[in-house]
Length: 561
Image 1 (spheres, rainbow, N blue to C red):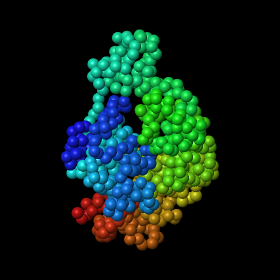
Image 2: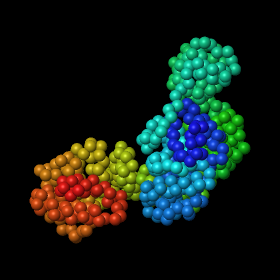
Image 3: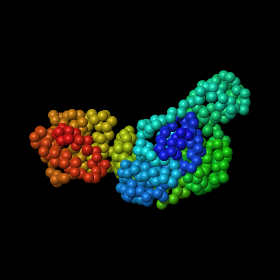
Image 4: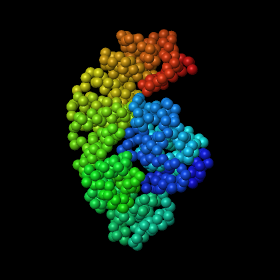
């Protein structure tokens, strides 16, 4: 770590991913780096499992101290960052511009003093934050910026960055550490069993003496069947939490249910349940929780155990208190989420609030977050038709987020409800897309063709796109010419009574239809018109981008490099 900090001080940016299992010492290494970063500006963020579906949540934690420099950024970067962080409304931000904005913020900050960015529990970062931070890490050059990540497992977004694998202690060091924390004589067999099962994990070794009775430490330890280290750690944390005063347990449950770690918010909510800030002190003294500068847990297992220890009714009461303590103007989405978790049964008011949160999440580029809000909204919707409609919307968001099984489950729920004909057709299209993705394209052309025919009298724009997907599926399978589905789709397209269109994807559809039915001579000229439309297009939205692979294949087939 010293070499990394020295390099940053000398004007060379550095990036390091510290990887290892829970309790191996990653956070300690990060803390040591922060302690040694004298004269640095330190920005910290911690991935939180419950925020993984909230786009840019981790990035917002990290960049919050630098947001006063937003006005110094170029206008496109400023607009993208403001939208991503919820500071301004607008269309879904371009992730590339968000990355450039963060890079510019760090560069501006490093002009004043070296910057050290520390990101713990990176395995729980939301995908948008992880991608942007990886983008930034690969582009840091001569700025005085250091990026330190700690993660449990390989993160696909961070995997090409320099990595330090933290492994367990050697047996001799493990015995020395164990001896330093034990106050009682330890049976030789028990000690060797602990050392063997801990696999050199420092936290397991330090905590083990608290989990075992004196009798077990004295010699009876090896008789029962032993569980894995994580299981014993969890049991130990459970016992330590159960020994706390009832009010303290309630305070800790509130802290566990609130992922932002805002001390003021946790205190306000806990006070509503008769567990004010002072009730957190026993948990601090027990070494389980820290209350400042953010409410944090010494180990992720403590958070999950504390939450699971509470009864369902107690958890609902905690989320109700957190919702009441959350400002609806500054943080409406967390408030909606807490209200949803507090609801004992169907509640249209809460479901509608979740739907509004889903809209905001999608506007920030958070498709997965929108799906999470809508999925919970489905559970709380009393009206069968609205429930089916929200299930369809949630399934449509789950699909691009890659949650295919969840998308199918929600889609099945939607299709059993009273949807109108257009909604049923959209559901059929989504089923085609999900099925073709899960089966690697098998029968994709046929499924899309069936959906396109159903959509044709209902939504001509979506029908065109679906016919193009059917032809694209045939193209992927090298069955564009001679394929029954491709020929049927081409005939339907050429026979359709649609208004002429200048959209690049519609021109591509017309060209492929001619090419499929009439052959190269007739189709080539129409396809060249489509390629010119793609080439001349200056602004592509996400829907337009999904057709570029087809345009590229067509260009190659025509020799139009």
